[in-house]
Structures are given as C-alpha cells and as structure tokens.
Image 1: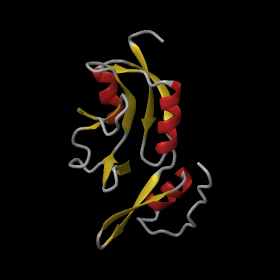
Image 2 (image 1 turned 180 degrees about the horizontal axis):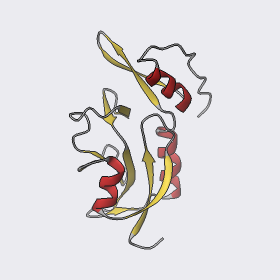
Image 3 (image 1 turned 45 degrees about the vertical axis):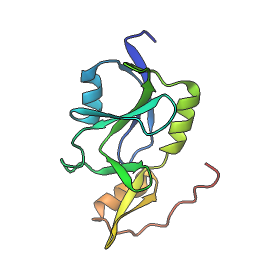
Length: 144
C-alpha cells in the first residue's frame, strides 16, 4: 500500500464488516459515510471511528453500539489514528475490531428506548422488511 491509501474496516448497517483499502482523502471517507465526517476516538489505542457527522439527525439507520448506551447511525469506518493523519489498521487491529463489530445489530423499539440485538445479515433484512416485527430465533454467537 502506498502512503496515499489506508487499510480500514468499513461497517454498514445490516452487514458484516469489510476490510478495504481506500484512498486516504476526505472525499473517500465522505463517500463511505454518506456526508460530512466526524472522528471519534472511543478507545485508548490508536484507532478511531469515522462516521457521518449528522447521521442521527438525518435519520440514518442505527448500525452498531457505541459504548453502552449510544449507537452509531449509518455506515462508518474504523481506521488507525496517527495523530494528525488517518493511518492503516494493523493486522491485530483488523482482527480485534472485526470481532467487535462482526454481527449486525437490530434495534428493537421498546417503551424505554431502543434495545440492541445481534443478528445475521439475513435476519436484519427480514427485520427491516417486516416493519420491525421480530419473528426470528436469535442466533447462537458461540465463542466469537
């Protein structure tokens, strides 16, 4: 990879994360998240999440949990944080964050807010098609 490209994880609602090599430009990141970007640094290691700055306001679908009580809306990118620059993820980081975000999540509406539940891409599509009516058996996540 050249210094103009970086290795990232691309996480879309209802899908498994994809490892990608992208152009290390603002435009490339904006295209992946569908608008202006926001950079979040939720972990102590040198990794950041690039998401759509107005994803929740614009009504993008909830994607994955962000901490214990919040969620990321719309597609997002996990990349390395080189201080002033975005950098490639290491093999270890790709492994760790692919595991963290592996399963799509459906957010079930409850009287107390949204309840996240891990699912497969097929279950996510069924959930979206059936108007948020859960008619599926939860998957066994085993030892992931």
